[in-house]
Image (cartoon, rainbow, N blue to C red; front, side, top):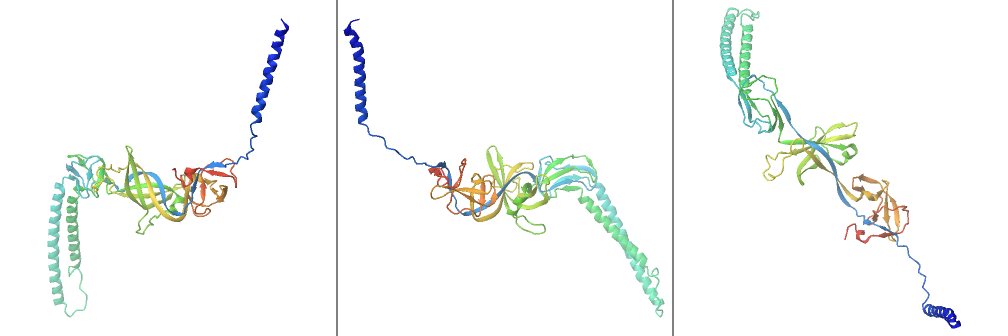
Amino acid sequence: MSLKTKFLKIIIPVIILLVGIVIMKVLTSGRSEPKKEIKKIPGVLARVIKAERGNTEIILKGTATVEAAQKISIIPQVSGLVTHAAPDLVVGGFFKKGAVLFEIEDTDYRLALERAMSSRAKAEYELATIESQASIARSEWERINKDNDDAPNPLVLYEPQLRSAKAALASALAQVEQARLDIERTKIKAPFSARVRTENIESGQYVKSGSSVITLAGTDTAEIAVPMPIKDLRWLKIPRRGKRQNGASASVQLKVGGESYKWHGRVMRSTGEVDPKSRMMKLIVEVKDPYGLKDKINSTRPVLAAGTFVDVHIKGRMLEDVFVIPRTALRDNSTVWVMDKENKLRIKTVVPLRMEKEKVIIAEGIDNGDMIVLTNISGAADGMKLRPMKEWVNGVDE
């Protein structure tokens, strides 16, 4: 290799390196030194709502099964062959109050009425005869013994006979009334507007007095026994026994095929007993016309049949000048986090009046306009810096 070639291989790389260093110096010398910035801590992002005093009505919720308010077994008071049964006398059939369910042959009872009337006529004759004899006997005794102060013998004046004749007439009259009553009892009528629950009767069947043949359930009123915790009863108006009062209003709700239907009800009484296991007491809510037999307006609404499982919302007391906040805003059941004007977290102790599944009612402990923190913050401490979410400053999504 020649000396010239070796020179080129050594000198050229050195020249390139020096040129690069010069270019770098030129580029860096024109750039200003970056300024130091103090980074501000924005605070923990949090959702907040404004606390506002207002009035709220307590609504107690429960679930229960619908039952008929009246249930009865039809037991004939006379025996005999069934001569007629109403066409609607089938399970699920409806009857108005006083409608005839079935009839029993009354021939024997009409004959008994004739015999009783005959006995009554005979007793009336015998009483009239003895009264006449007693009158004659008294007149005769007074004529014979007008100067005698002794009392007459009762037998002489027919007094025992007269009492016996009056008793016989009273017995005959009672037999007539009994015979007429038995004839009336051959027609079995619905004691109230009702639906047939069970029946075991046909025309030509012989029925015995004292045997149950039909069971009925009333259709005028339904009752719903709603279990409620004892601690919640203080919020409700429950009529006391022996006092005619209007109980708390209630809304009975039934969901069918994605649709919700409502009936108005009212608390009529409580069972007066506390279940030892659940520690609950049942409130009896009454609903009028559950089958819609009288309601011509809501004819398309389904019936509130016995056995239906429903939701019941009972209106309680109206609480005035209180705060209603989400249940998630209550910490440890006794404190609330508040964001002050400097966007710092403050912890306030409160005493809840009532805690529900989704909300809490508070009377004291927070002030009107306080910004209540909803977000769960790990390691939260009094004075922590917060950054409110804009869309939640007023408690609603914008």
